[in-house]
Amino acid sequence: MPTKPKPQSATEAPRRAADRIRDTAFDLFYREGIRAVGVEEIVSQAGVTKPSLYRAFESKDELIAAYLRDYNHRFCERFEAPAAEHPDDPKQHLLAYLDRLAQRASHDGYRGCGLTNALIEYPEPEHPAHRVAQESKQQLRERLREMCRGMGARDPDELADGLLLLLEGTYVSGQAFGEGGPAHVLGVIARRLIEASM
Amino acid sequence: MPTKPKPQSATEAPRRAADRIRDTAFDLFYREGIRAVGVEEIVSQAGVTKPSLYRAFESKDELIAAYLRDYNHRFCERFEAPAAEHPDDPKQHLLAYLDRLAQRASHDGYRGCGLTNALIEYPEPEHPAHRVAQESKQQLRERLREMCRGMGARDPDELADGLLLLLEGTYVSGQAFGEGGPAHVLGVIARRLIEASM
DNA sequence: CAGCATACGTACCGATCGGTAACACTGTCA
DNA sequence: TGACAGTGTTACCGATCGGTACGTATGCTG
Image (cartoon, rainbow over all chains, first blue to last red; front, side, top):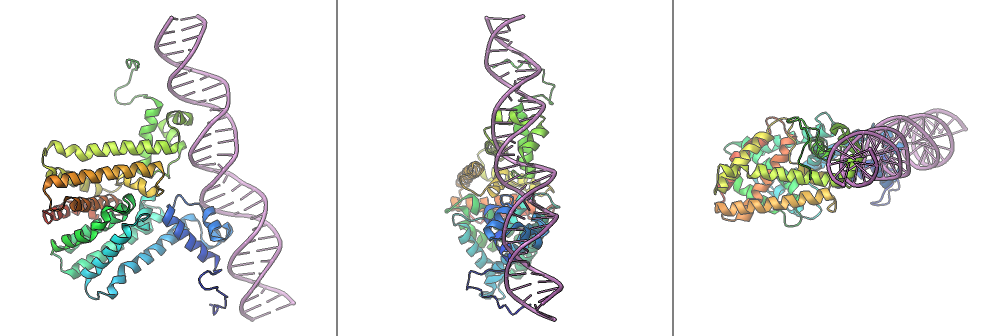
């Protein structure tokens, strides 16, 4: 590991080709959809060439899988972030995340959850994209159950699934309806549901 | 208009090419996704040829739009069907639909809502697929509001949006999680939410 | 039967898809 | 100095994409 002697020019940096490809693919896959984006578009926008892509990734499918793993990583960070302000309070933690989500999802141009979108674009259960996204979603479900247990819900698993439905519904409704979409009620509805489940 | 002298053999019929294309496209687009299906696959499985497709439809995009209009039509039928058993009772009408949906969505291989899936596959707002799906979803939102008014909810629009989130969440969660997915709680959760909103 | 429109198929188009072979260039480290 | 890893360059592959020019079969009407 070199002691980064690269003359990185502040933000804009001539980083490794693999990293630029990873970042560019992330943005394009998320914004335009995975199937809609060809490898040519990725490398040209990343300022690299195709052989560089295939030296770093076995195939487009592997690049997709890497994108989804990255996405899940960033998602988990966003999901756990409110814990800093609400330590040992899973209810407030979750509601804080939901409020932020509701705000993002009520913006025009919101693209929902990259993992959910990938599941829909790749319905075949064997496809790497489907697999990675599915595993991430199961992980989220388990995390929600854990939080609902922490809240002291009557039936934690049931409440967790209910909240998961609301979550996923917000992701996709944010895309279907623009500015004044149904996502803005997420906060009140979730609170009402939680209250009625204690 | 001929007096249909065609010797149609009961169910299996050598119908018009356009009809076979429409039906085949419906099945393939829904099951495998729109972008994943090429026109070649459609015509070959329909037992016709490409020129027949392009004589009946201007382009693949137009065929997609026709598919989504068909989908919305069938959806509305399914959605309104329970009205026969629950006339003038929007709450029982809606709950009956939700119960049937929860059952379907808890099956392995469930593919969700074709309109929702299309919205995700085609994020560009100008694309015919996005447009048709978006209009259908707005129509559904309005219908839900109407039903919530009929239920006598405190804030009908708010409850309608909450139920819409649950609906959409069920569509996508049915695909993410298989047999024992979160979709099975839709009934109890919706009832609890409605009760807490009266 | 002739005439004609409708409906369909054969064969093909250019463009793009994901992916690769072969070689030149650059900077780092020994 | 030389070996080497990483990258860029160019050109290319077969397959598939959406779409079409053009000839052929069929069936109704006179």
